[in-house]
Length: 403
Image 1 (spheres, rainbow, N blue to C red):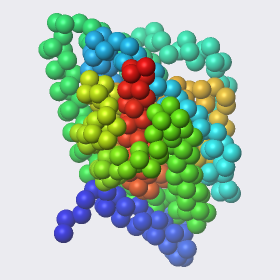
Image 2: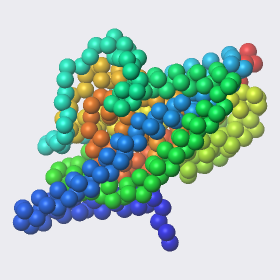
Image 3: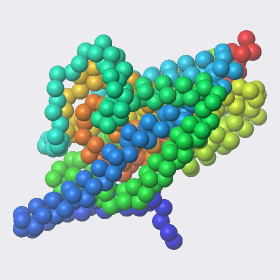
Image 4: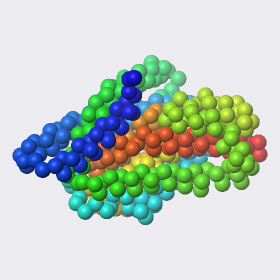
């Protein structure tokens, strides 16, 4: 039976842990051990360079397409403004909550020997006003080349907005859609080597760091799950119960099909038809509202992904012994919130977004390999959180329109 890519990545992850631990335990001549570690480093670096190569184009083109497709805002007006405001607010809360708990529990902080952060120079952090000013690029093309993600996001939103408001832009829209599809196809090619890349990176990590790394990875895994449930319980459920005036048991019973489908596919976009059916049939959400809020939510509501990014960023910073300043946290919040607009709701896109956040605060992308092996299950859970948020916003907007 042919194994799926997820199974192959998991096998590569587990095999890397076993091989790395054995390499650290078994006594072999240091020369051979150094050569093996060097080979593993090369294999891991190849995979990382391929990921780095795609971060900027994926974010740039998916954002342009996402914003350009928000043309319904002009016709729906009030509904559009309220929907976008709620989605962005919940994403802002999600990343803020995740950073709070990550700093409270400090995953990755118990490893005695720091990981080596290659070519990472931590300079004095800029002020808050400088961060806001730096969002606007002096030269957007230079920002694309250098991978300045906040500036890339800002420029992409402007282009997407211009395309959305220009009637004579069908050819250009098609160009960006086609190019985005090509980039996503390239990503699928790159992911074919992910199992080998993950094996090399993880094997090198555990060969040099030992068993303590596994304990900290479990701590990270459990913390992300806790924050996902905390966010849903504290942000979504009170709104559904008290504003939507819905019994929580009835709410979850009404969206259970969407939750099961989203958990299985790890894709908000693939779950759109099921979620639409649930909110219209189970909660009597009007057609014109549901047909806007659900696709919009699949596009810009990435609360679960934002939670993973917040915890993973602190986890990786702790692994490499790099201190994050207040302005770094501001950058993380802004980047994760803005990047949620237009990001494709497909499996694994959170890892690409995590690479963007790590770039923004100067953390090594090697850290992605540490969390990628357990990311599939977390991806399934955070997609459920995203879909729950989509349903919540649809119910809220429907109720507000009745009033």
